[in-house]
Amino acid sequence: MPEADPPEPASSEAAPEPRTVIIGVISAPGTSTELAERLRPDLTERIGARLPSVRWVVRFVSDRLVDGPADLSQLISAARRRLIDEQWHLTVCVTDLPLQTARRPVVAHASMTHGVAVLSLPALGAVGVTRRAADALVRLVAALVGDAGQTSMRTPRPAPVVGPTPTCSVAAARSPGGSRNSAMR
Figure 1 (tube, rainbow, N blue to C red):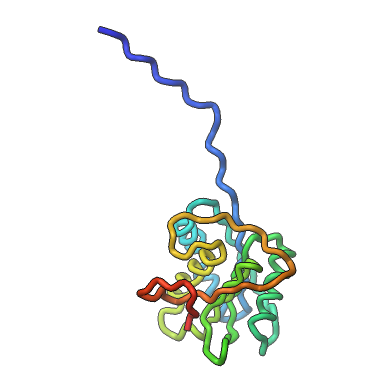
Figure 2: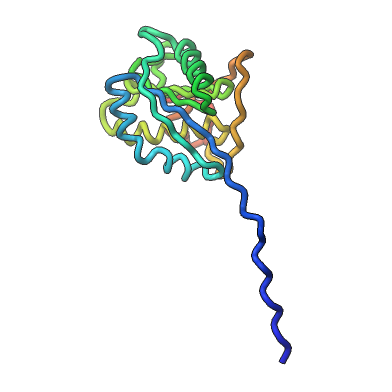
């Protein structure tokens, strides 16, 4: 009976470590920070389950980036400055400021150019806020990296400091038609 070939030796090359992406979650002091603290234990795992191609590190900071009333562009600019100062790849702002676009409330907004997303707590309502905020934060991170429901992920690129501001508002729930360009209202 012929002898079986011996097993191949294990490769000496280890699998490459996945790229690490650092997300800063900036929450306004008070209610926003309390919510961020409730989300802290599971947020990294939830983002990793949706976007498994990289290793996610989430850093939490309590800071009122702007004094109200402030518009969305001021909030995005302040968050972008913090992202650069902290050397994060992406940042999500959790604010207690009500945000509007064309006089309509906006729950969340993502600026892919700046690598910044904003989540407005007042627009989430009073019931199920923790769950809805967690779901929105995961969707916002996915929107920032260009994943609108696909299982794969594009690696986030550092956004230019100057230039035009293409933005997208992210829907609280995808419409049945699968539209990616709807506002969270």
